[in-house]
Structures are given as C-alpha cells and as structure tokens.
Length: 167
Image (cartoon, rainbow, N blue to C red; front, side, top):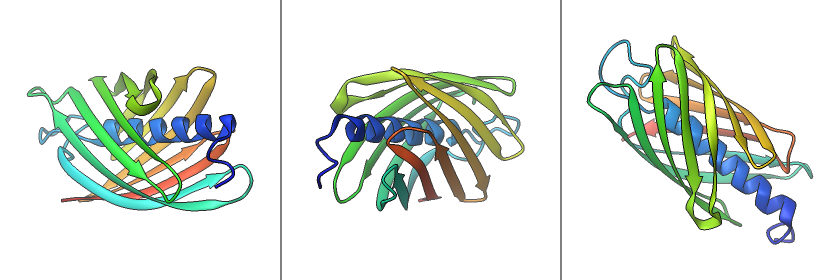
C-alpha cells in the first residue's frame, strides 16, 4: 500500500492504535461494582474500521487481554490489532480515582509512549490521549458483553470504530 511507508501514515497508525489500546484499557475492568472497570477483565476480540484522511477505510481485527488489580482501581492491558496493511502491539497501565482516569501507554514495535486522562461512569468512558504532538478524543460505551470504541483525531487516521465482545 502506498501510504504504509509514509511518515504521516505511520504516525497516524501509531496514534490510532494507541488510542484504541487506551480506550480498551480504560474499558477493561474488575467485577466489583462501583469500579469504572467493572465486568471487563479477561479476553476480548472484535472488528471494526479505520478511516484515513484520504477518505479510504480499512477493516481492522483486534484481540485484547485485561488484568485488573484486586481493588478494582488499576488495570493492565495488552492489545494486538491488524489490518491488511499494518499491525500494532500496545500495552497500557491505567488507574482510577473516583470517576477520574489516568495512565500511560506504549506501542512496542514503534517505541512510542504517552499519557491519557478522562472520566468514567454510567457505562461510558471518555478519554483524551496525548503523545508527541498527537491528540485524540476517545469514547467507550459498554452494554453487557459488548463494548464499542470510537476515536476521532485530525491526523492521518481520522476515525476508528471497533466493536469488541468478551470471550
């Protein structure tokens, strides 16, 4: 694919991948009620789309694993996603303090890392992601064993929409 080797595309993929991982990590959780991570620990998988700034759209496949600490306030996550033209390997470490969420993430194959912050409650999580001149807004909604992730940015990757299921 002609965009694969371009610097804006690589940055966009990295940023979108990181955004997805962060949203997934924020959504994963512990069985304790009252925890913003309640009910989402374990293995998840799903599909979705990635929309690029040139107007093209690609299908993406993802698998995630979430581990919640015993108090339900901390989360470690790993996310592996691939499309026909790229892949990424992400991890994150997230902590909640009431309805506030903060944490860090990294993408191993590109040696990129950054921070996230946001809020959680009522089955919805909203996060702002930052890294090396990149910023994105992410929204997660959960309903039973289904979660949806939406990411929007002004970079090469304009939007990501993924539906994940537990199991």
